[in-house]
Image (cartoon, rainbow, N blue to C red; front, side, top):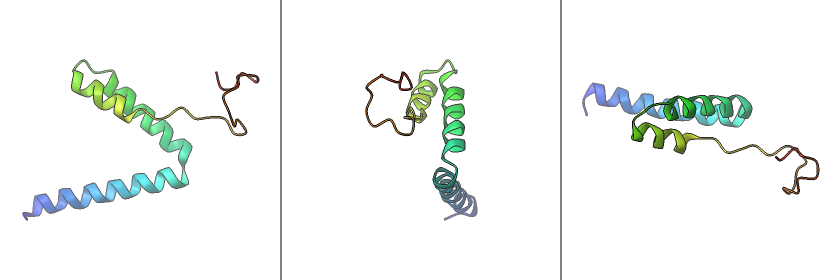
Amino acid sequence: MSGLWQHFVVYAVLLWCLWRLACKYAPNASWRWRAKISYFFESRHAGIFKRVGRALRPAVSIPAGCAKHCRSCNTCA
């Protein structure tokens, strides 16, 4: 493998590890980062970028103590 290709692989693995670490120890911050990246891609005109943005879109967080979506407390809405 060439030196450039090795650097690319090492940086990709390093970024993936850092992302997993952020998701584990800072879930709110990583959720916001993912939402910002998703919005950045979804706001582009090309279709491929919109698809990437939709794929990166984070799941909606459910409030603590909300076992089911009963809508009685209006926090799930």
